[in-house]
Length: 373
Image (cartoon, rainbow, N blue to C red; front, side, top):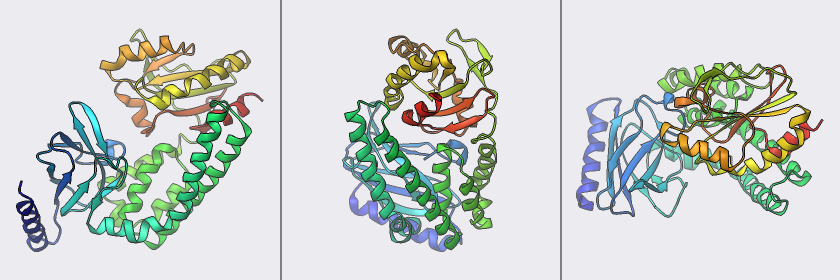
């Protein structure tokens, strides 16, 4: 499409949105990217249950693409460019407002927020992100330092990495307090709503209820707001101090069973992973060391894979090649992962002998401190 026509079409659409009705429930996202062809995907930032409409796919032609769909309030997405089944670009999170907007993507800027102009992203640039700048810089520096320390110690548990993790945890709590303060002063901010959607899969925290309570009634009653309220209530009961729920899983022989959690084990680590997840695979050497040292002392690991049917043979191959001696099960259709609001992998739950959750998403160095007692 000619650039002038492209811009003119957008202008006419925007004028139509302004004058046709008080609320425009159709959005048009007209975009450019420095790639001639491919498939552009508009994807959810978290579980699909938060979206009434998602996973749109359009062709890129001469570096341009257009999405049109229905939304009733500002909605968070990420964009991805796929060329011949290979991902060439993934954006950072951004918000789309009802009506029309233009977005510019740079294929060389992976995971960065694309250039898009609308009211939600104006708030994001001018009011929201500046609240987090200082603490985010500290987190980036500590993350790089921890990576360097782990390389020196070859990813084995060490006190220096543990101390860095404690400082990181403190800064994360500081970020949660910043979000709470922002919600109090901006109860109509959809940025806060989608922030909670993105945070919850990492594990429930009581402060998330406090943040959600500050949002306006209008936001709470949106489709996303109602789903978030449900998930907050559910995850509140699968947090530290509560019993891990009963799950149905499939064995390597494709037999459906209830996940066996009772026995004589002092500690059980439930590890959610999948065979094409590099961070998942990297953790196995550490887990094998811990398993060999502490299994006979009452430590068990249970692996649960979310691999889709076409990747089951790959899952079986990884188990064999990596010599994963602990029990492995399959979560068909991600039913358990979805119910537990797991969106990031690997994710784990550390349980005691009574199936009570002790920790969620525990790091290896912290794990050894607990199971070695």
